[in-house]
Image (cartoon, rainbow, N blue to C red; front, side):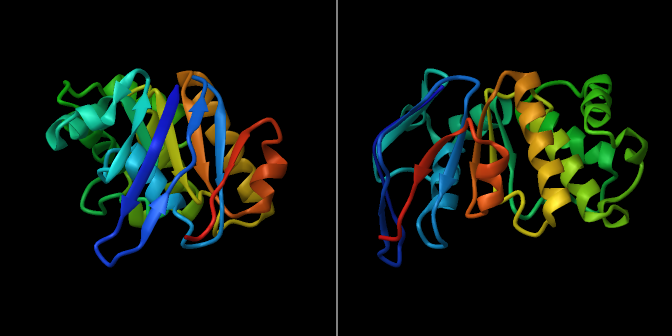
Amino acid sequence: MIRTRALRYRYPAGTALAFPDLDVPQGATLLLHGPSGSGKSTWLALAAGLLTAGDGDIVIGGQSLAALSRAGRDGWRARHLGFLPQKLHLSDALSVERNLALAFYAAGVAHDAASARRALEQLGVADLASRRPSQLSGGQAQRVALARAILMSPQVILADEPTASLDDEAALSALRLLAQSASRSRATLVIATHDRRVRQALPAALALQLDRP
């Protein structure tokens, strides 16, 4: 479940963004639409607790993010939220398996190798566990990043422009994997996108249109 009320954020340069109030049931899919500069990535960062709202609040799974300290948001994010950013942020100094292990460290829980392997198996990349990210194709790297995002069985999965650089076939495959992964975790899925193919592939999804300030 996601609920926002009177949500606003102002960048240091002065750009102010105001977002419509929103209620998304647990397990639903929400598409954030809008042109570049409309605040899609900012909304995701606010929902992930990476930015602090200037006004208003986001409540996810009953947890008000405004009520958490910065350290509290970090711990909450690691345990309850999966994030698939545009830049996948996989460390090339580590193997795929060790990249997933960082998620356990961030959440403050013991490393569970069996859970990490299951997540990789669900995304069809278990055989790549010992490779470095530089040895992966773009599609393989995205699957590894998604495995990392679902590793802790999150309440919410956030995806920022997941189809931006993909052809039609790869885009459809990526969206299918996102939807299946969210369904397995019973997570709410939020996709920020300006790609019309996403709406066509997920016709039952809720939609929020954002416009430039």
